[in-house]
Amino acid sequence: MKEPEAAQRCFGSLLDESIWVHSGFSSSGGRVTMNEVFYNHEDLAFVNNEWIAFLKRRAQQSPLRRSRLCLHRSHNDLVQQMIIVMCRDVLFRPHRHRVKTESFHMIEGSLDIILFSDDGRPERAVRMGTAASGAIFCHRLSVSQFHAVLPRTDFVVMHEITTGPWVKEEAEFAPWAPVASDALRIFLENSAAQAVVSSQALIPEMLT
Image (tube, rainbow, N blue to C red; front, top):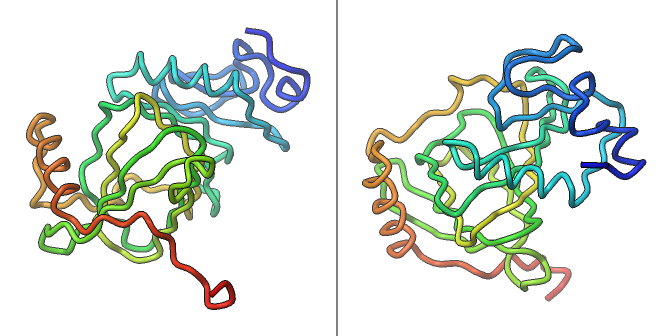
């Protein structure tokens, strides 16, 4: 795949392993990663539709049914930004972060964010889509609350921003949620149906 000139300056060719890291190795000395995770090593980062198509293919090939391009350089960066691609059948267990904040900006597709109480009661489900769809397209979670996402289209593409550093053990998985895939999907679908559905954004007083 031939990248446009701007993308070549920032990420290089998709076949140039001196620029980005994947599959557990890099000729530039990167750390071990999963096959569906890619890291930027450049000062400037541009993402085009070729990257999205590439990440979609990798998501389809991944057992996890997702892929990501990390725009930050290190797990230790205090600001972590990622382009994430998810297939419709991807599953995320409900979890919460003790100290982190996170925000999503939708690029393509649609998903539900399901918010839970501490004891597992589904409190709210927010349908997100692109700005062009008229749906809520930007979300920020600044409290430690159990949540999960449920894709509603064949692919979901979003820009996620979260606070670093990344620590694997920092995410706390909900003890009341199923772990097995089939049971987890049924649980999330039922939770989305039971929660208070929201499709309206908060309107600042200055706009009313």
